[in-house]
Length: 379
Image (cartoon, rainbow, N blue to C red; front, side, top):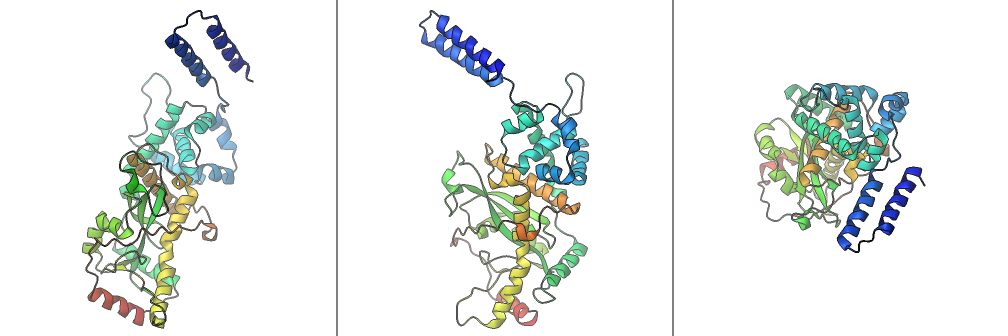
């Protein structure tokens, strides 16, 4: 046992034994003092870990621990340091450096380590670790609109050509993105807890993402309860109205959980023996293009493992964490900082929340004709 710990335990025990008071409240107070002393004992911290140890890591060790390459990390630190979220020194106690603040936040986002573990590693108090994480989360959320952005016309033409190239020139020719939902596990929320339980019987929030051919997010919508159907989330998200008005020259690809719309191309439902071969071919190339969004979610969660279970205290904080991870994902993509080969990514778990009969979409007529024309002439 640590000498200081032993000394504290002995001293507290003597105070309890020597006390001639039978007052229960006084006894409880002495016990509380003992517990406080034990909690404040110096833990197994790593002094000057950031200043002296991190710089000696090999590049692969740095990426394994902090989930970014050194060059991407430097970009993040530079942007954070220039922002309003980094508290510049104004006298008094020295502030935590921008580099250390970002390392703490990346250690949190990249793993399932708790605050105490991070406090030990970085030789900080738990409250200081929490402050570092929150500053970086707020910073990343503040730049989300510029980092996760809808492509302009020139970019859309490049994306269309790239998606078509994925299927050897066969298949939908005007794909500008793929949409899907991914469940992020959370702790049971205090408010309306049952609405957050999905069909797999665990609480979650839904991350709706739209990605391009390079697995870069071009739109995200976060926070709907896990019991919601993908079509419901889409209908309530801002992208529904945006695409209804601004997607005349292209469309998104979605799975069969979504409705067929003028700007949303979904696969045919296979009804068995009478399912014609041209529809099968369409479904195959549709899947080959649409897999981009599944890979994007896989890359996101493999890099930022906090998303396997976001144990924040509120839904709002959970959403901030997920958005921050999405922003970093895009920053890595921009820096060509690729983390894993796609073959080694975890498979996206399918969670079917069933049909939502309350949803009404006008998906007949022209939409069906459009899909048939694509399937019969482009596949």
